[in-house]
Length: 468
Image (cartoon, rainbow, N blue to C red; front, side, top):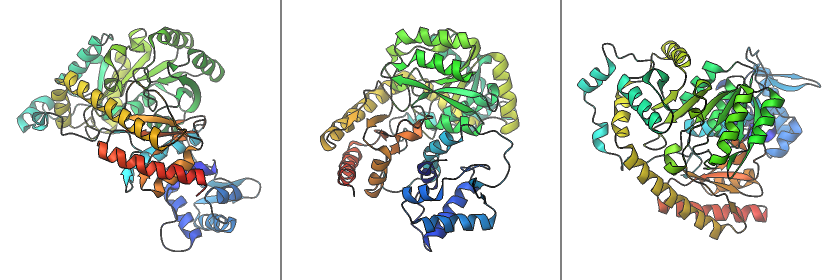
C-alpha cells in the first residue's frame, strides 16, 4: 500500500507519550486490530513511509521491528513488510478501501475543532416533534406478536413502495426491505448479488462508504469517469468490457461527493450499457431528496429485474435516524430477509415508526432541507472564493457538500487540521487515486460555523502556499 494511504488510516500517531518509533508501532498495531489493515496487507517501504510522515528512516525501521517482534507483521528481505495472518477473502480492492476508511474512521473517532469532514444532517430541530413521540402500544402493533421483522414493518414497506411507485418505479411491498440506512443497504446488496473477487464499476469520485463496503467484501474496482452531467456512458462501457464487471454502483439522483444529478440524455445510454453487460446495478439514491425533484429519474424504471435501489431517511431527516431501504426483485429481497434474520433479526421497531411518521411530511421537510442546504453551500462557496485565491469549486445540483479543486488535497487537509478544521481529502473518494487535487467540505453547519471554517481554511491555504 502507498505511504499516504497508511498515514490516513493511522491518523494522528505522534501526539502521545514515549519514543516516536513506539508511537508509530502502536498506531499501526491499532489499525491492524480494528481490521483496517487486514492480513496480507503489504506496508509501504521504510524510506517512502519515513519521507511521507515525515520521520527519520530509523524511526520507521524501529517501529517495524517492534511489530515484527510482536508477531503483528512479517518481514522478508526482498518482499517487504506485510501484516501477519492468512486471509480467506481475496482483497483486490484493498488500497481503495484503506483510503476510504478515513471517512468511517471519522465516525468512530470524531476529532475536536470544526468537523466538516463528515457530510451528515445534524439538525433535528426542524422536524415535527410528534414523530418522535412513539408510545409502546403503537410500537407493539407495528412490530406484531414478537417484534422480529427482518424485512421491516409492513406499513413502512408499503409507504416506501408507494414512494417509489410515485417516482416512476412501480413497486409492491414484497420488493422492499427496510435497512439501517443507506450504508447498510449497500452492504446487504453486495452480500446478496456480488461474488468475492468480482469487479464493481463505480463512479470516480464516489461515496467513500461504498468503497469501504465493496473492499471489505473482497471486490475489485473499475473506475467510471464522471463530469458535471453524470457518469460517462462510454467510460462505463469500457470499464465493463475491460474488467468483466458484473456489478455497477451509480448515484444518478444526486452523486456523492460532487452533488451532480445525471442528465436525462445520459440515462438511456447508461441503461443500454448495463443491459449489454447484463450487470447488476446498485442505484444509490440516498441523496435524492436533497436535489431538485424535477430532475429525478430512476435507472431502475427501465431494468427493475437487475437493479437494487438504495434509499435513506438519514440524509433528509437526521443522520441518527438509521432507517433506509432496498428495492429489488422479490427473489433478492427474500434472500436479504434471510441474511437479516441471520445477522440481527431485523431493525428496531420504534425508529421505523418514527420514519413512517416523518415520511408523511416528506415533501414539506425535503423542500425546506433543499433550500437550506443550497443556501449554506452558496454561503460557504462565496466565502471560500473570497478567502482562497485561485480555488475552483465545482458546480453541484444538490447534496450537503462542496467539491473543491486545489493543487494538493492532502496538504490542505493536513494544514487545515493544524487550524482545528477537519475536511476530507478527495483521494478518499477515489478507487483510482486520481482525486488528489480535490477536497470535500461539508456545508451543513450554521452560517457562523461556516464563516469560522472559511477563515481557518484561508489560513491553512496560505500556509500551504508558503510551504509551512
